[in-house]
Length: 340
Ligand SMILES: [Zn+2]
Image 1 (cartoon, protein in one colour):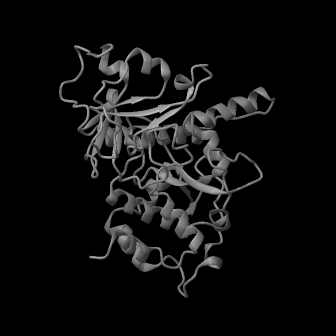
Image 2 (cartoon, helix red, strand yellow; image 1 turned 135 degrees about the vertical axis):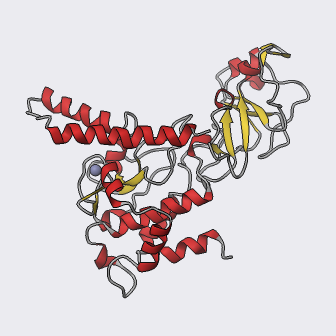
Image 3 (cartoon, rainbow, N blue to C red; image 1 turned 60 degrees about the vertical axis):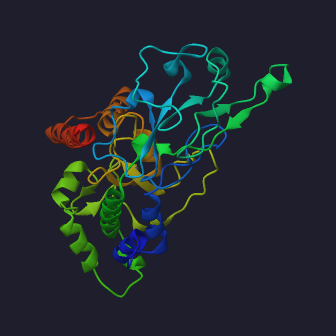
């Protein structure tokens, strides 16, 4: 059997390289985190080893993590006093094998110091601790230097998706790409319309329920739209690449770059990277909607307009749309996350 990469490539035939790359990149976690400040790997595949915070240890992915997971414990969750384990610490969590203690500040480090025998953890183990202590302004040289020990341990658990799910989402995103404005002018094969092999695969996997995609708000009238501003996406916008400074997001309203849009943002306890949950959206629309979520953002925009003297009529259609997107989005995801 060919590797997953080749199997997917077969279904992306005809799309320009920029779009194929963009689709491929959606399989990776978000990046731009400095290595010496966090415990996570930078820009790796979402099906990797998952780092699950202790407080979320019973909110694992409903289907499990195919590369396994490791529990990240805070010093105050493990110790009640220096060297003394809390009475209520979960005995099924074993530090050093499937769990580690993570120090990211001096206060915790001084209050609950690591045991003398603890070693810095490699990814997947062994090792009991990971240190990411920033340098301080203390005059004592030893206390002031930063301490970075232990490997990045894996991905944020809520960014996880299985290989099969990643494949499905890429196929869905490929189809959405074929429904952007002007895509025909950029196709790289001699065909017309959506390639049959892609359509067949999508239908086989139940990925092309266009009515559902329209309800979700990633398509409208058979065309791919930005979920927030509902403008049609142009193929060229998917092909624009904005170079981003490491660790910094570009926020420039004149750039209409289009990126992966999570209908429900990725956050602890939810697994929102899955089919019928993703679309293509403008970079700036993504940034605006990310924190609040889609429907509350639109409502907020209506209030902003009203306060600025514009008349905004809340029509029945708007109310219906809100209702539907709420049902499709939030409840759909809740089912996926807690089906355990
Ligand atoms: Zn938009």
